[in-house]
Length: 206
Image 1 (cartoon, rainbow, N blue to C red):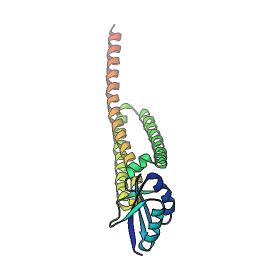
Image 2 (cartoon, rainbow, N blue to C red):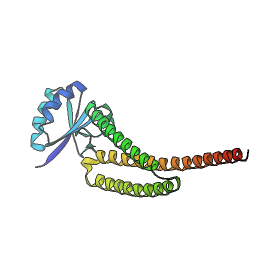
Image 3 (cartoon, rainbow, N blue to C red):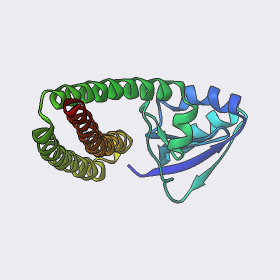
Image 4 (cartoon, one colour):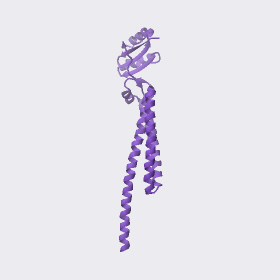
């Protein structure tokens, strides 16, 4: 069945009222901004669309090409995903929940790394940490690559994969930073140990 895209414009209040009649009856419903959205309908339904739009005191016109749109976190289609997710309460709530979950996982992972590090001696600790860092980075880089591949394959899940990819990249950055901090801590530890040894040697000579 041949379909037609249409752009509908009007005040936010009028668009909101008309949306209740349109959203469940059109093939595709795409949000754009506060005063515009797009719908795709079978051409045989254009008269019906014209009546609904005029009854709602809105304006509409045919568009030759489909708008560029993507899936938002809350499951709606939008031509401005970023702006929608900033303004949408459901998107913000879902993003906050995911962020909290990610932070908890990162905190748990950091605690485990810290516990493992304290259990090793100074020399072995550096070597083991370097190896663990390399292995973890390799695994995470593979996961990032997989996330990118799936993002391309499943456009409808693009935003979710992007958040997943960003979270993995943040973990990589934190692990690299932790490795640098560990190296600095080792140097400080050895310097302190040398100072104590020197003081003890002087004390014994006295």
